[in-house]
Image 1: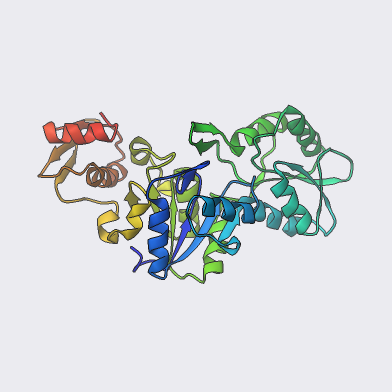
Image 2: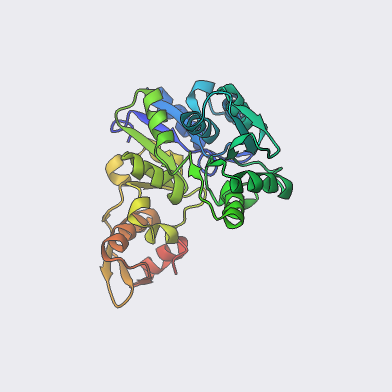
Length: 327
């Protein structure tokens, strides 16, 4: 894999860690990639932490990281604001202090209350966001202010499971204002393109756990992607993936970075037969036992035939489908 790709653009939540908990094997896989000379970039839609805080958090989990290797959606949102606003313009911030710092550091002026001078609203994830914050943003947006969202992830993977993400808060303001924000982070391509440029990469690999942000962003940026099953994506969601959200490679976790690209690529794999039947894909074993090999085969068949239902054709396939949660 790393002979084929000269940089790895890593999602964080759900890919490298779940909040304060490291995902098993992630640190070792990243260290191994570095030893092979592969450049690493950490690309996160979470706008609640500054790049130096993200790097420090990674180091606390045993992952080597420099601040220059971190790209956040807060940085992307600040860039969008600078493209649309004159220097010194007032921006109402809904989100963490890290987002406000990016606004102020870019020559704009952050505030927390709506007023006649507010030119834009920028919204990023913060666990402290409440009704009063959304109310101020609603007033400004209804008053004609530009609206930029750092990302629209509906959920945020944590060690306790999926919790409301920035997209859930954005949805509330959509309902209240009948407006749509400009989205700065994933799945829009600029964040990945900036990461690839900073790494000097010509053949980057995006790695993430979400089809609607990580993989969709890679597809939009026209770069290859590897989906891991340590966060949001599931076997069922992979079978149902639309063309704009389909990865090239599939792995259980980041250990796939040490694997052979051809073996991780989604497509027919030895040991399994998948044929379209009446409203379902019929799976039989041809000596196969590896459930991930079956999933790669199933994805290729589901995408080709536009069939997501599956059923077993023998005992071996029944066991593999059960492991994948597809019975």
